[in-house]
Image 1 (cartoon, rainbow, N blue to C red):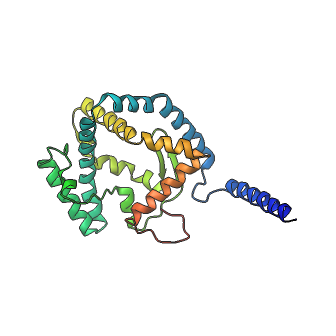
Image 2: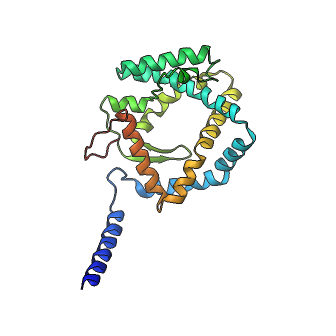
Image 3: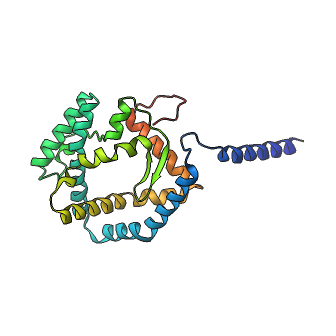
Length: 234
């Protein structure tokens, strides 16, 4: 009876687990459409973007990739100054401004991250995060073509974030395009190992990616001090 009871409990637990996994996620009312877009993006990534990023990582010296990442990271810090100030985050604004001033001068336009060597903390912030700090709800989960996972709040903020990127204000279109592609490839290369972890660990890559996205957004929203609340907003 003991073995039979244990087996029954195990079967019941498995059944409940499978049933729970099929429940709709209230954060993701567009899940069927999002899953299709996720599949399309994943196929495009595996066919083109990931191979290009892999070659980039193999043929480009580490010091060069590091400089590229630092350069674009400095542009992120510039926009972070504005958004941290808009959110009335004094220390984050001061740190971000200090990073920009040091890395843009001593660091030669951000190619060298001198500020981090001086222990000046990085506080990345975009307009979507600023809206969240102003109390705007994240809205539903959305997967965009090529761009990947967002919440509706972040989608609305995309045009503002686009204009907040100084690289997008370069007059020469060819230069803008090169920087856009270089940034995308460099970012993808930095996530190659993370992608391997997801492929190895996730039974459902879509839900795994979605949950990671919300966890990351909540972490950013609360500066790492995430409350134990029952809500599902990031």
